[in-house]
Length: 286
Image (cartoon, rainbow, N blue to C red; front, side, top):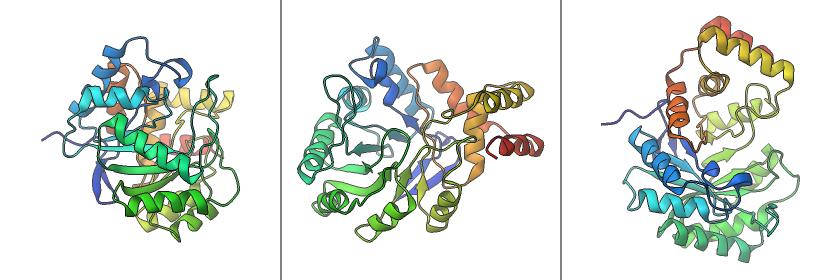
């Protein structure tokens, strides 16, 4: 039996490896259009599963449609323990922008598109994307989340989650239907969600950070680089290892289009961070 990298956490009624894989980079430049090497993209997905990854994060608006179609090509029929998490709430326009698509009808269409392009009858987890690429937008999510809850009741979705949201929006959603995961920007330098992560951990809800190296100042980057050099590894590996150490409910979804980089990311789950290095890393976010 393949060891699940990073240990495991309960995502709804699924047990998933804490080190997952994000499929965004399988599309072309700017997450738009096809990749330069489709065979390489297929190889990355197959290697991820071979290495024990059983949690893949995607969205039908990556490409659009590209990553989901590659996932289907590479992995369908899917292993019984593989869980695919997708996002709805946005589309791509002709210029590659990411306009919102959160009306009930748009969400219903997005769910059916995900089912079609992934080759599934039911989606394991669907996240409602509320904010922009890296920051929540205030406002009610009652109408869109209710629409997804209705699709869940119809048997098209097993579990619901949220992406790029604040604590108030999570609480609002939980009054409508259970939330199994929250996906926000968070890393050793960008720690706005510290209290939220702790609150979700107490509730047994997964927190899935994206942009593990996003929003760093030059000084913060240099401090991270220094720690990585002392440990003989890469800044990304240190950033991922720190996230795994930060809280047991954190699930990682680093993305890459390279099998070599994928293997490096998986190895980060084994990286031990000495106490003095943890203290140095914690100072980056202060």
